[in-house]
Length: 125
Ligand SMILES: [Zn+2]
Image (cartoon, rainbow, N blue to C red):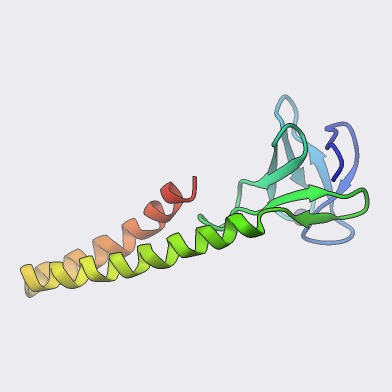
């Protein structure tokens, strides 16, 4: 893996003809075709996607020709956390439904669904 220079020109991982352009005064790179934004992390050795779905932040390294995913082990750990959270969350909704029957159960379900992406985002940090 090579060091990432903010002054250099890199293709965006999304498409072959898309370019990553440095965002002024930041350690970030933005794509000129899609809305993806990447921050330079790990002592300029990799970039992390900051936009997109919470919990699925991609970390990529530059090998001189293309971007390569560098967080395989990490993402496995992340998916285990994700699955356990889903199970715990369903259990919580079920307990709530038992404790508060009727309209309160519906309210609890809505609340749980709304809060779910936030919990995933907090855990994946
Ligand atoms: Zn792009």
